[in-house]
Picture 1 (tube, rainbow, N blue to C red):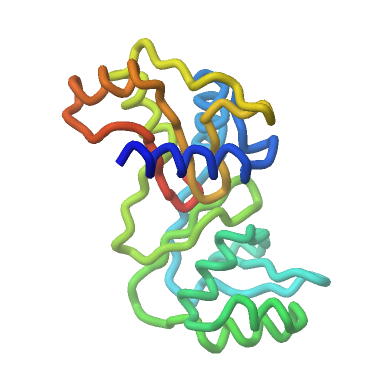
Picture 2 (picture 1 turned 180 degrees about the horizontal axis):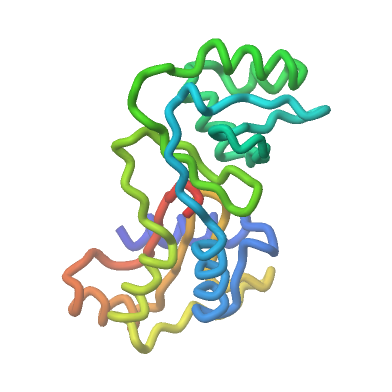
Length: 199
């Protein structure tokens, strides 16, 4: 288990862009808090989720507000998966054609879809049964049980083991912090990671 954790931490260390790396837990907390405060869960029936081609990209219109929301890579992947079409194929066609393909293949059932937006961007799209866990909620547990939390030493690329991207968050705890958390919360050891859908 420890070797697997070290391999995962090393992989995260080198694949994260500078804007996904954080120097301290407080920095990561502020980032996640800002995202949670600026995010809105919107519930719409599939019929109210409309594709909106905009020059060389595809946006979504939600409900009747007339405003368009930009898709990020993660939400575009989810949209294609829900529609049952290959993301690679949809990426090869024009925005107008992609909009028609997704409009014709998107499920039209009666259950509402959960669309998480950040300002004017769609962060994720899920069915009604999905329960959201915001990154900030997970960090609250870390702060509660690992009161002496310290990220590992800074790596050669400036990374510390604290990462947050559009679809996940990764918190690499030092041994002392993770042991304290395990004793307090009766949970498995580090790393703490959530593949959130951009929470």
